[in-house]
Image (cartoon, rainbow, N blue to C red; front, side, top):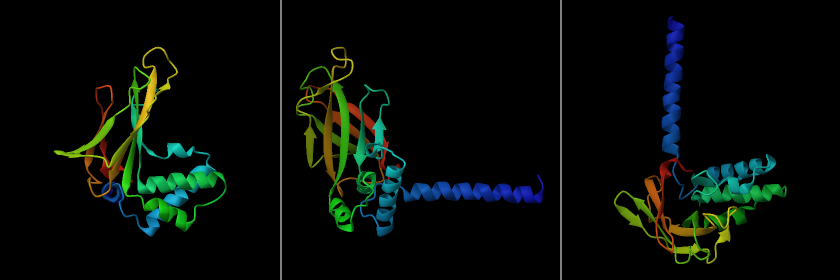
Length: 201
């Protein structure tokens, strides 16, 4: 390798390290977004609408990819602004500063999980917790479908699906930590997911 080739190799190696480290340090669930971050989220939502991307595909997704595997998504502050902006964008509009501010006033991270079960009311009294290291974080409140909906394979298993939604106040969890999300269906059992909050904007 000649001198120019060596310098070029070192340059791109250093650039790659800088990009990886910079990206890693920049990512985490943002609790107090800056004006620039908010504007970027609005712009991304509008561009998604222009590209005809369904707004619900913009949330941070996790879990199984098979239609009948439990899965879910997070509604973070910036993610929610992006989705809201995409809805406006589909109408060729942009959300006002007041509408964005009202959304950002929300004090909870919203975690929505779709689970599957054997009976119509299997999700009644479901619960959800976060686990970070040795800490268990309880939600401020949990919502669940009192009645499941039939799946495409009903009456074969799994015949029903339902949503469980947990609301976790910012400040009660580490927004950059590895996290386990556990859902406990009302009729028993547990469904868990492992996430790294440090990789979620």
